[in-house]
Length: 223
Ligand code: G3P
Image (cartoon, rainbow, N blue to C red):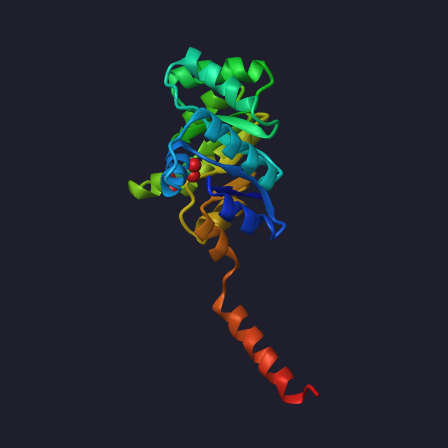
């Protein structure tokens, strides 16, 4: 399973990319808005274009950028503009009727589409049939309403296998390290997670304690 960062923050990408385990990144309008607000910058098309291009260079893999248009024709136009920014851009579209129509058209043009806001197996099936390259079921938000995000992912991965659909499944809306383990066990192709979860994947108190003891013992005998 590949590991992506779910962020529009360049520092976070820079840091995690150094680990050598980062395969891609996903963004959404909330994450991009948060990033520009934090820097006190007004969001302009030129600013967004240069931000996404830098993000692509830092990641060195696919970067999902979401359209904000809600109508198919406008989604297609925005998707083409986003895809033209960098060859690594994947156009993210909401799983709505308009989103499906836009997905079909952009995919036919060879533009990779990530269908987002997936909360049911049937939405995933529709998105795959519309030609999506990636499906993004939202585990955390399903768990938030006391349903089972893991079960949703399990169904989607199984449908992809049984139906032999040429689509990659991204476990999204990851909230904690256990979600990542669960996604890997269930056969997700990718897990996209916030910076904090990425950092938490590595942390274990016994690793820190073990290293401390090794160093203390070493210090006792070293010349
Ligand atoms: O980018 C899509 C998804 O990962 C959002 O996660 O935590 O806002 O539900 P979250």
